[in-house]
Image 1 (cartoon, rainbow, N blue to C red):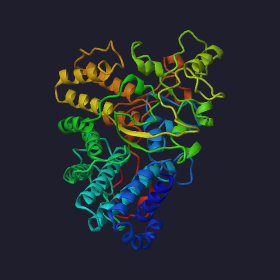
Image 2 (cartoon, one colour; image 1 turned 90 degrees about the vertical axis):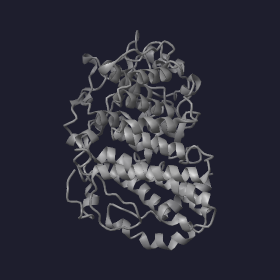
Image 3 (tube, rainbow, N blue to C red; image 1 turned 120 degrees about the horizontal axis):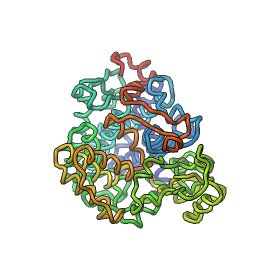
Image 4 (cartoon, helix red, strand yellow; image 1 turned 60 degrees about the vertical axis):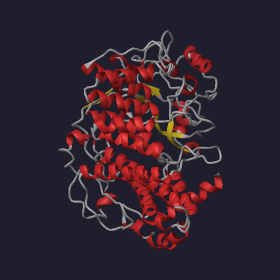
Length: 511
């Protein structure tokens, strides 16, 4: 597997057509020279798809923190939200969303660079696969996978660099550079409506091709029809297209039943029956201390986690019922001594943490409300990285049903997620109106904690960030104890990086 993934990754890098700065364009002759070999057969083209898979979990830009999709989850989804605690004040600018308008910052640039790399590779596959030797079914399946990658990348870019749909004037606000072929010329921004039209079209085409191919995947980290449906569901709920979101959420989780309690407590590093799409991880293909799991897993020996374990916000923790197994995945400090200014556990609370989870690394610190949900299969941070699972699809459908005035269906979906799975055998839901919407939001936060959704959800809903310190009922350090609304921080829109605008002079409308 190791040699195969190395080859696939090299193929993917070779065919990257580039965006964002003129220096990338210099790779075009090499790419052209290699295209004939890469797309000579569908077997070779499948390696290119595997290479795009691999691009989601490698190191970028010479900086240890940029590790593909894991960085998006951590820096852009978890850190700046309401419910994820990383008590290190030097990271306050990231956690407090202070880089949205710093067009020269590497933190502003990284998602643009990363997702357009995936798009560039997907475009090369889409443009060349029809000429590859092999069966029609193989060509169709590979093209569908590339379309799925492209749609997913455009969706993630739009959530970061575009206004939320509710503020977009029905999609008339600035969108993205819609690069859908292998050309490298300058190109203006589309509208946000055009971005979603392209995402929907790519996914419609992908579903049709997956279906006509008759092929199925053999590995969880390969995109397939369920993945396309899941991307569609997430796109549609972000677009506030509730009918489509509900339909696609059902399609996305078809064949992927919700996990049981044993699977839920297994560390979230190995695919189970609920995982719709993930990225592969193994001990012989690790980024060591630079991997996503080395930045979050409770049992890692990485200094980042040993010294400052990741924690749930005190306020969200207190919303988890005592009958809910998810409450047991965080360290309850009730009745124990700890430093309230930081959360650092006293001797007895630390001993309790090690007794509950003896695979904690021997020199790890313990903090009140530290997480035990996400672990690692091997040190310092090895694991398979989940991108979509059925629980998210249930929550998307519940939200879509609520906004479609079908509150009974929304209630029943919450029951199916929380009671019927055994996560909380005592769970019931009779809430209506605004209380029901808040219940959906609360259980999204509980169920998907640490998986990179927090900030994206807050932006989509137009909800603000409101963190509290211990004296106010929270557990954030004073530097991270901030409150700001949806109209602040550039309306939560990351500006287009100067590495794009310096090269692409057709971008004339600021975001």
